[in-house]
Each structure stands twice: as structure tokens, then as C-alpha cells.
Amino acid sequence: MEKEERIGENYVIHSYKHNGQLYKSWDEAILLEKTDTYYVFGNQQTKVTEVDGHNWYTKEPAILFYFKNHWFNIIGQCKEHGLTFYCNMTSPFILEEGAIKYIDYDLDVRIFSTGSFKILDRREYAYHKKKMNYSNQLDEIIKKELSILIEMIRNKDYFFQKETIDKYVQIYHEKVAKSKEKMPL
Image 1: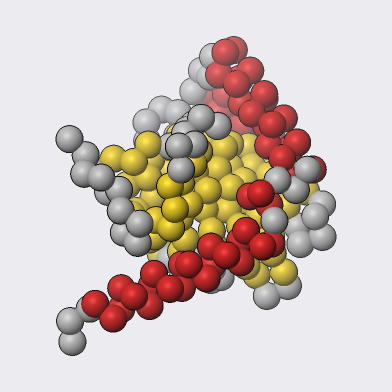
Image 2: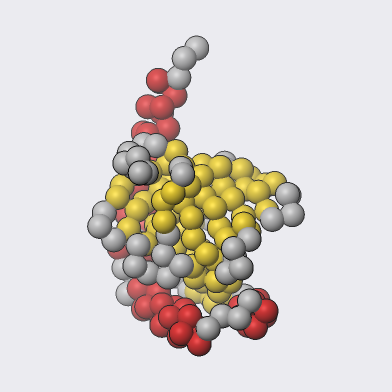
């Protein structure tokens, strides 16, 4: 049985492709809050490992929303030029063996600090849909969930508000500071 998730605990993130191949991983995601429908994590200067073994590090604080019943995740990024968001069309997440796991379905939405947004990677989605045999039912789910996400963006729902991201960034920094206090010298 999986142990109970605890606020302040660190998890890794594993993003898979539809064929089951690990696509990308992140080495930090601190659990900040959990609800019946979504979990909130935070990270900063996190090591990202690509499928080809290439590593890079994120820069800015990021707040990550993972949903149990939606086919997307939302990442608020606190960049120097303002708050931006990156949303991935994914399967609903699971928490297993200390990792946040989901299947990445290629389509992404970038929301700029101005509030405008752009849907990205339509060609990649079409390519993988054919190559990995996405079913018509899966395609319908992705398109429906993309519409829901776009509606949330246009309405500036809770997840897309600066106050929400600022609140969780503060909680993230408090959790990181608290964990450093507990570290042995």
C-alpha cells in the first residue's frame, strides 16, 4: 500500500508517452496542498532529464497543479518579466512510488504575461496520434479537455490568478526553509 502523501514532502515527476516510454523527469516537486480534485506542488531550480539523457535546470519558482479528473496540468511560472503559464495536455496524474506520474499528450498551451495564449505542438500531436494509435475516444477526450482548459484560461479561473500563484510560492519558500532547518550539519 502506498504511504499517505504528506504536505512538505518532495516527489519526483515522471512524464510518459502513450507507448509507456519515460519521456521526461523532474527531480523536485514539493507537495503544498491536496484537495479531492487536485494537488499543488512547487519547485525551483529543478533538474530536468530528457529522454535522451540531456539535463537542464528550471530557473524560476513554479507552481504545479495536477488534476485527478482533468486531462491537463497547469504550471505557473514566476519569470522576471511577469507571471506566465504552461499547460500540458496529459492523462490525470497518479502518485506512485514517490513519483507524480502521467502520460503527456503533446498539445501544450502557453499563456503569456499579457494574458494572451497560444496552443502549441499540434503537429507533434497529429504525428504521435498516428504513430502511437491514439483511439478516437482518446482524441475526443483530449479535444474536450483542451476546450475546458481554454475556457478556464479565458475566465481567469483560480489556477490562473496571480494571487493564487503568489500564495503558493510563499508556501513553497516556507516549506523549503523549514526543510533546511531540519537538515543535519
